[in-house]
Amino acid sequence: MQKPTIIKTIDVTKVYGVGDAQVHALNGVSLEIRENEFVAIMGPSGSGKSTMMNILGCLDRPTSGQYFLAGEDVSNLNKTQLAIIRNQRLGFVFQSYNLLPRTSALENVMLPLLYSRNGHLSETKQKEKALAALEAVGLADRIHHQPQELSGGQAQRVAAGT
Image (tube, rainbow, N blue to C red; front, side, top):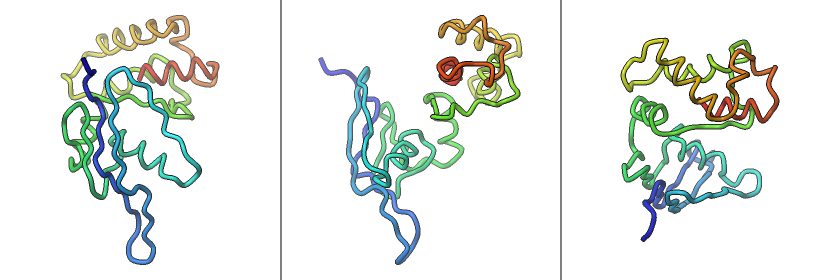
């Protein structure tokens, strides 16, 4: 039995600029990623990797084509709808981790819960969820440490907890 499709793109195109200044960052990209698959997006500088990741992460929309996330066509959602998708269904680990520098690991993990539309959790419940996430990645003893006090791997695990 085939695993469910999590990500599917059909002829995704992304064009930046207008007229003679147009740049075709993506030109008809189709892909399918199923549950539990690991995929690497590779290519030379300027080949559209970041553009593709921005579309897959619902940070940007394609100029044309379709993008289905867990069966839902998210290609033409507006910015607010995309923000809800990012908050509720996607997680990001950036190269620089994007942690707030003067904020503890616990507070960094709690931050997305403040913006969650999944019911407004009390601060106590937010702390419980954030602590559970940090415990799950082996960082219960580092909850009060700021990003500069963490190793690269620890910072990455904090970012994964967000």
